[in-house]
Length: 402
Image 1 (cartoon, rainbow, N blue to C red):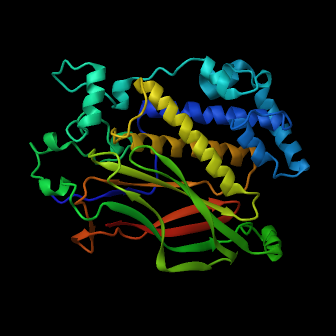
Image 2 (cartoon, helix red, strand yellow):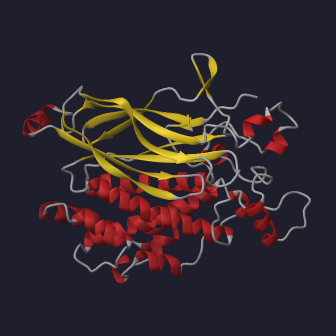
Image 3 (cartoon, helix red, strand yellow):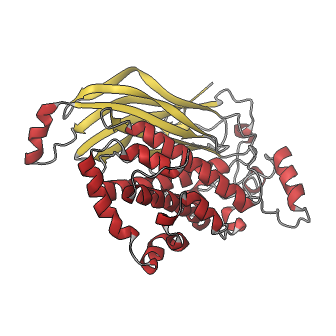
């Protein structure tokens, strides 16, 4: 059987338990943003969601801060019934009486999560192994207990194709086992950018906005984050794409820019392996927006990881391959939800971050191009960004290499 990596240009959540975790983390951040909105000068605790939100709020002028305060205050003063209908049990928190929303959320107790629905550390059928024995078995021989009891990327994100583990699939499908051997040469996965195109410059969506274009062209920067198969989250440094984008302008890269790469030898022999990248596109003069989003992403990632660790009853180990899938999907969903709130309530000029993923079923996997299987590079893909009356897209592709 010729296996192919699966690319997703949009990351969504289908797993109910993962969504519970992501919603709680997102709502924690949103409540912190509400507190900062109505009380912008209070002293936030270091490294808290409130401190991150204050950093963003400070880039606005006083007139806008006042407008934000007026817009958000009625939401904060709404009845508990209304707030619980929006935020669930987090709506019970009186954010004006707490210094840290995070601490208040912790006092509510852990989420009720069905571990079997998460798909992690569930004992194999017909076994009397204890949880401790199963953990050791997973740590030592993750390739044996591969995906039989673990949700795949498609089960979590709602896709249509699911990989089974080697032992189960071999009974039903004629798989070339050589595809799964670790001695294959292409043990790295990279993301390459071919070009960045300005379809519509920001602030140019109406006749009245045309006047604003005379004050300068778009100066665009790109930053990002990555999540590998172990759930490890890293920042991708910001770089300048261009400083004079007008409608129709394109920044070409020759040779194509390697934006990020992963070693597929991490995380043991658990297949398939999922990798997430998030593009953070921003105007350079937009008050350190990419830095703010990176800090937000990092904070959300830590919260999601801690919540999943609590749900499965222990520390997260690198041998649990699907954790990268769970964490990557949950963080992308949570950050997108938070950014949507900023756009709506703070009227912030943000390009919502774009999260993409690639799931590789084995070292020997290849793409089909022009009707022929065997390519180490994917087709070109487009990641579109819409925000503050502008439209950009990044043309990219994935590549397997040694």
